[in-house]
Image 1 (spheres, helix red, strand yellow):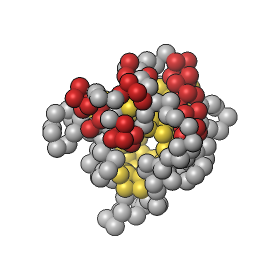
Image 2 (cartoon, one colour):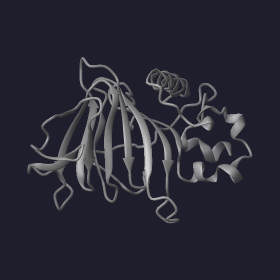
Image 3 (tube, helix red, strand yellow):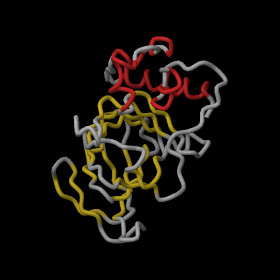
Image 4 (tube, helix red, strand yellow):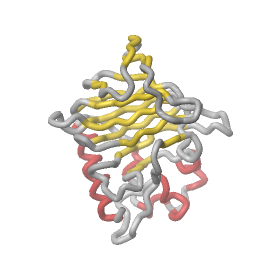
Length: 224
């Protein structure tokens, strides 16, 4: 992805959050220069990868397969200091987050507003394939059994609890607009806890055609 594209996506994501009156911490708006020399006081942000995260999952086609994320809080499995995570995300109509599960993380995915969120679910087999067996899930605390791979619609205000080893992909429903998505989960570890069904690049290579508007979580080491 080009940095100019990333900057444009972040600016649009910010506007979408402001439209829904979802406020971010003050450091979310720091320029790259404001981060310099601050590791001693911002180590939790850097080490636990809080902040802006824009990915096209290696597709080179963000509008088709991509996601805007901002990790607001996150802990660390090794330090055992904070065993939870919160994210805010945005997905456009038919913009896919590809099929994956988590080895350890349980999570609630929440439609915070905007359009409808489409989820497709499969149980993982013993060999990490996708089972055709029905999937039992909790939607806002109410148990529901859904057929494998059949689209499940979450309307604004609804949420689903996903346990480890449940494959899921999601996207905004066509004709209903962009979706504001929340995530409340156990500690998030993108380095070792994600199992994508296909070959996926989680963090894109950035072509530096312009200066960053804001740092991404994978920019911190370079700038701090």
